[in-house]
Image (cartoon, helix red, strand yellow):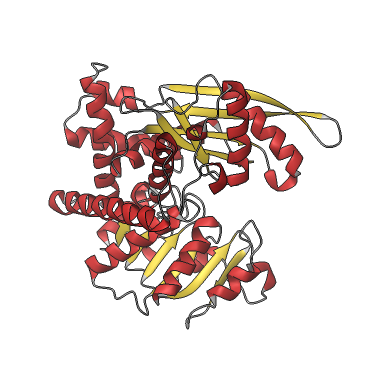
Length: 414
């Protein structure tokens, strides 16, 4: 039988299993298997050559029983309605795992920002906000940065929403520049959360992080920060990759040099001749493997060849359901994406809280609060996995979905 590589249906399958293990009936699954709301919009943008191009955008709101929905907006040529739906479900799980008063949301526009000017990107960003403005807001649905979107794009979006609302609304969106109400530490929060999970996982299996051999697939925002954090801790990053290939040095790569040479999209391997393939990178002999690129990288085809002791997912959906089972049976500790990458939404929540209060925290306060949230979440999920003898992914889904299921039940929805 062919392996299921569809993110949406494979997410639904784990949610169904988690709800079943928690004792909920089929009606709860029927409610949670799809977003409550899904908006598809058309966004006309006047391009620099004076032609008008019409883009398709989406906003999914998975469930708002716990509170407003929260989730990023990605600008990418591969954005589809199914991807946005699946990612909104994951955001619900992430918020439940780190105990935030949110449901999951997600948005996206099908475009290639690498081929657009700053002016075109600004007009697209503002057009997206106008198109979805009726269903978003600081108490309804709070966007954030995602793939190929950044603090500048968040600033344009906030400005557009504030114009429509006729009110300065910093709490409408997170991941903003500091001068517009952004939070200290937001830009590196995802990588920081992953680093905390790596350290906690290493303690569980008895790996000393000093000298630990780490392989990171992906050198974008999360991957590059991660490489820096881990090498600063004394770990040896022996492999990294980008969309064009991978670099390997068993003695450890010079991360500061690579960071200095990478471009804004995380590309660095094109500067080197002796590269290896992404597939070879995943199968390198190492202590910790971090897939931080795209989905479906570890499958039933290569899961038997993974030589790491710990796999920590910094990307969304890099390991298929079949591969998760294989790694679990082989005794490899897999820290799932919904836990490992929850640092971003956690600090986004901190930013929203600061915006609502009009009182801002220091970087130390943000780091301290993030550390506590991530360690508590890791311990909780690790204990559920150990006591029930299940893999960490199923345990994370059980912890993540319980809160939304309970809120829906108390509200009388199911």
